[in-house]
Image 1 (cartoon, rainbow over the protein chains, first blue to last red):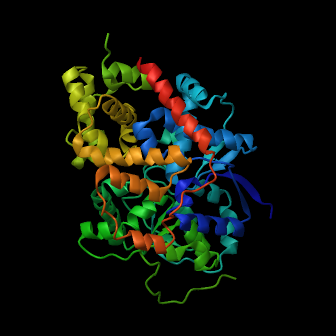
Image 2 (cartoon, rainbow over the protein chains, first blue to last red):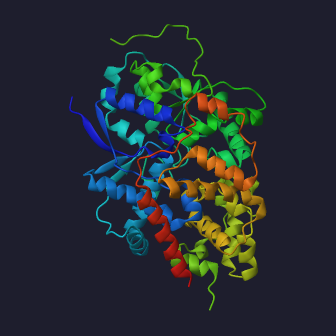
Image 3 (cartoon, rainbow over the protein chains, first blue to last red):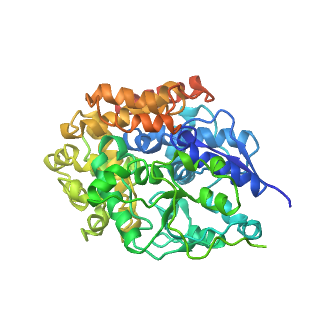
Length: 293
Length: 185
């Protein structure tokens, strides 16, 4: 099988508190013959704090990253973190649509902004090789799951252009491809509180509780995400979420790459599952896990 | 001659608050509206009047700091008024005029600590950022309960990440600062 080669922007979360996302991404990429070429000397995209208190920096930082990717010959860049993905896409969109911003950023970076690489998220990347995933499944992921997209993969549509804004389905399709049963639910694109994790933990608890409640009411056995903040707010902050729910919940939160990794038979250790706060355990099934021939 | 915030927002960020007809859809879908002193649609209304008194109310509001930036409002707005961008503009103006609501000190501190960490190392150093945040806010003991678990699960690095071009990133911050100063004079 010919391998797919793509520019890779890890972002700060994947080398920090979301190492499990990085570990599972690399393991799955290897299994699916995707070559991730890391952008040399990449810098932080500025994340939420950037655009909230320093607009120019919030555009200049991502463009600097994309210019490095371009220089390294990359035509497309995949950012697994939804926030990074959103900031790279927003910055590209702004310099493409506003001559004034483009000029300001060129002055800050002291270089001309030429053609920039296309930005994509991890679901878009995996969707490209979706057909090759099914035949490689060795252990179906037979859980009922709530695919939780959050805010920044789908919004605003004119910037990301990804999936259906209010009812995205691409992650559901990937889960179904490895044997999972995605549910129809109401909180697919509701906000988890994102960067308030530290400064307003109570907001994260309140919003996370609404998300968890709907998923649990609809019998989800796991929540699947593609964003380090969604993961950390529902997993690492589960104590706060449980306080708002006024009950202890143990539904685990998995990255989409971990779900695919499990189905491909990749050992749990290589997928970083032990790093989660909420243990990754599922209710026993009446029928033992089947092996696909 | 001083310009209204609405006029500046239109000129600098190409956002026209005049397009808003106050349907309230932004407020209805906002996950943070219940934490706000002024609802999102009302923030727009305060700018529409172009009265300095109303503008100051918006700049001093908690609402601009409780906005999470989830982009739900602009996605659903029938007039495509870019409210998240408006919130960014108001936050920055509020800081520039020293009008930020004191109850939002911790939110502001978080953003400042975050960017300071990036300016220094080129990439976010989470442990250092949280330390800086604690010093700014005095919330010294917050989250100490989960820190050891984070550490043992390999989610809390105690050293900054190398790999970025630190000098280059510091220069981006410095030049952006200089450009802002120039535009204000």
